[in-house]
Length: 132
Image 1 (cartoon, rainbow, N blue to C red):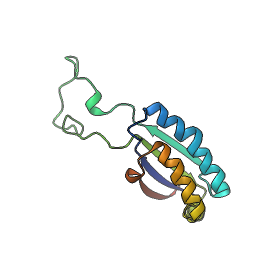
Image 2: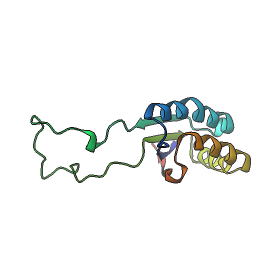
Image 3: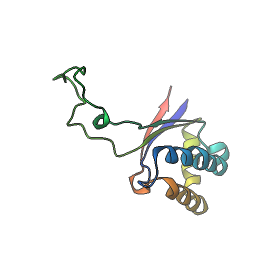
């Protein structure tokens, strides 16, 4: 049974979305793989925010907003640029990853890497847990 967590990442304002994506994909993820070996996530899925509700132009052809709609002009844009979904083989492997993450040498290398492309103070994570 796999174990999952979801992370919300916010890019540094000085980076374009493409630059953020490049550093994350080509530098940060390989670093995590090298640090954690068998405790590294089995799989990553990334969703990059390319457009927000406020970016979508309203045109005469657009249907009128429904009173049932939950997304309208009052909806706030997200303060993150990427949602990353990570899977581990099982809960034990997830906890091994977490333990290794907190080792002083690993913390320093990860912080250095994250400082290159994201706003670390806005990094958020939720644990989904066991998936069937």
